[in-house]
Length: 264
Image (cartoon, rainbow, N blue to C red):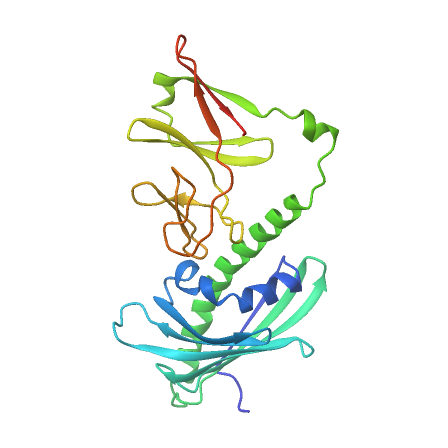
């Protein structure tokens, strides 16, 4: 194989396990990396990789078919553009485990279709894009690890005694503070007002633990994979069948107007 048009090196504060998980996670591309992918349609997948058709932002009707293959024993993986825009492109990523939570990567961009006089400049465009893509992936992988670590915590006496209710103040004053994020007994909840009714919902997506953000109307949306939920019921609103974590319970003292949030 000829020399790469460009090379990108980086040290990531994440485990090799998180990187393999990220490589196989085809579903996040058009959501977390919307600047590079507008859509994705999976064609095939297994434990060693996947193949899909991708859409490109700003190019309606144009796209490409890409094939991603893992070589776990060789600590590397390939992303090849089989057809469409950039057909023939091969991107090789080598992995270098540095410790339990540290992995080095070296990415080679091979562009056999590019003319010799333009390979370096096109390669630099790829390298610049990958800086941004890996910035986004690193943030997701680190948060994913934090969520997994928290889920493995074994409750003890301190957890059993932890407060499961919190006062949110008077209802009139609360209206000016919404939406309001509250951490209660290790859970992150968000309080919003919908059609004059106070609603508290879990801010963690049940799919991968992503941070749910406010979406249109009554929806909460995960920026990692685009999962959507109706915060009033917790039910999926995108047809993918998942359900949000248990909602917090809002109680309002009719006499004093004090608002309390408690875990069910």
